[in-house]
Image 1 (tube, protein in one colour):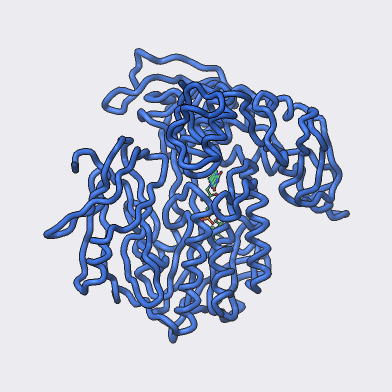
Image 2 (cartoon, each protein chain N blue to C red):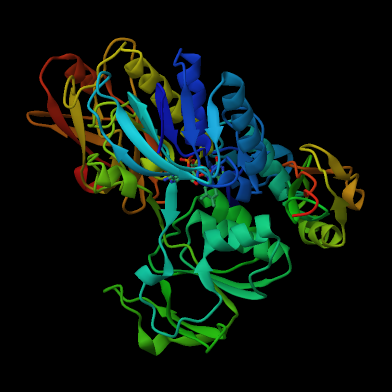
Length: 122
Length: 434
Ligand SMILES: Cc1cc2nc3c(=O)[nH]c(=O)nc-3n(C[C@H](O)[C@H](O)[C@H](O)COP(=O)(O)OP(=O)(O)OC[C@H]3O[C@@H](n4cnc5c(N)ncnc54)[C@H](O)[C@@H]3O)c2cc1C
């Protein structure tokens, strides 16, 4: 038995999952996505990574990023370490892929905001 | 001073203000001006780099900056003017379409006055600061609100410290704790004085549990240590009287103390203009369309009450913006107390209810109520009471001070609103009511 809070949507369902193989015994989910979430939490939990990446020559020093799909929860810190070693040059556009297939997960790291190039001379 | 006229002036270009401006244009307002004191639009969203935005509205799990980008694009496409680096200083209520309100603002171009029949207050909220807590110790560097740290990390690209303690378990604190952990800093723990977390359960789960950050309920920071820079804090349990229990004190070495002890709607400007403010929310008393008790003055978003989810902010912003536009175009007359059908009051275990009152006129939809409880409870039946009667709403599996409860109005209450007498209705979510 495990007590979980579903993080898929604002609903915040309290789930209890026992014998979760195949999703049997998931209680408290108000939608199928909650069942799916409970199943994945019991097996291999995954999360979308979010953070920032350094920008050179930009109007701002960093650009916010996320993975375009969830990656293993255990890989979040390692993903952050990989991105700490990355610098991209401005301009950066929203949705631009900054690092494809991060850590071999099949997920790309994309920018969630644009950063213009810094204006020269100021 | 430069002077101009508009149909609707919106103060604040966060998601609330942007939605209000788009909707005002979409229902036919001609000139709609949004004033934003920051150098970018989006309110707090640009610094909220985490995902969790737009799940209801766009069916996608977006990061804050992406959501802000979509809402800004929509406002610009609608034809609203978004003025950055422009801070509204004062609102002078006029009293109607013939005597418009005046907003005085300052920007690098100087002072200006914009007259408009309708003004939408969308200034968001601010964090309760360190000074309000009165923790003993010197004024060392390294003590800041969680939101300040979030801005430093996500916008300025600066880490505030290497080892942090978080006081208070509001959502901002939980989200920043995770951010620090991901960047390789140590978060010694989140210390919360009451027996439950202030933030959403989903954030306790994905920000603290996922990263093994301990949450100490019934604990507080009793002292800060250090000369120039913070060197450590004394934490201890909190007794029944809400005072620190000295015998339980222990010291934690840290260079950063983040405060996440509550958000307060930002309403200095509204208060000075004489807009009636609710002591329960700290925001203007509004009806189901965001109309305040001052004619032509509307409010939405976190300026009214602190919202959990941006999707709700956008929806309420649109309703307020559309109502403001209709008032400016002379299509409705939200006079001071005209048409107020029902006032909602906070009863047992309810910290606030919003909207504070219902006008219900032509073309208005039945509102749902947003409320927050004071204490957690399980399996409660919400109760609506009025002079000479009461009824109950659908059972709630749990109520939790960290989560907004949304209730549809029961048919009995709708019936009262449709009858002609004005009534006060008290809302309760307490086991004692049952
Ligand atoms: C840390 C944190 C995390 C959150 N996470 C989520 C989440 O994961 N998912 C979700 O759906 N929601 C989340 N929310 C909630 C949601 O983001 C907010 O409710 C929403 O941003 C509020 O919008 P707003 O427009 O009312 O206020 P704000 O975004 O605060 O915007 C107000 C704007 O008004 C401007 N302003 C104020 N005074 C003046 C003035 N006098 N003149 C000119 N401009 C002025 C400010 O500069 C600001 O830009 C989170 C909130 C916080 C604080």
